Image 1 (cartoon, rainbow, N blue to C red):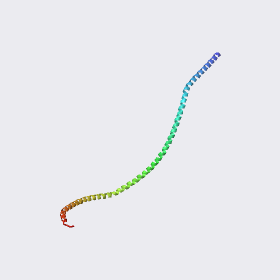
Image 2: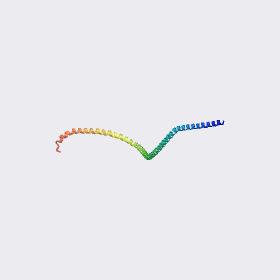
Image 3: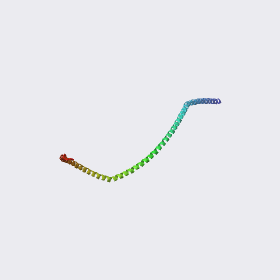
Image 4: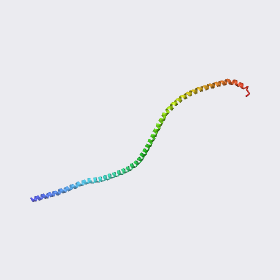
Length: 167
């Protein structure tokens, strides 16, 4: 029996060695498969990480340039806003002056109402004078016509008399 036990132990140890050898071979085969997957994946990860770092670095540089540009433009915009504020103040002052002037003009227009009434009266008087002048013109024409006829009537006999006069 002891022989049987020793054979069993020997068989067990041989089978354990074969099992360990087999396990070792399977593990090595599996490790090679993982090496074919893991190493290229790690290389791709390193390349992508480096590219990501490069993109972030470029983005930071672009942001820096943009901040400087915006800061420059903001100072220009600020000075323009200040100038615009001053111009608005001047415009407000000018509008107030115009309002005062318009109020003054309105007041003066109110004082023109009596003058307008007087001018209407003067207009009526001028119309009356125009009519009177027209009547005087007609009368003067009639007088001219009458003087012309008188000249014709008196002129002929007088010219006859004038021929006898020595002077």
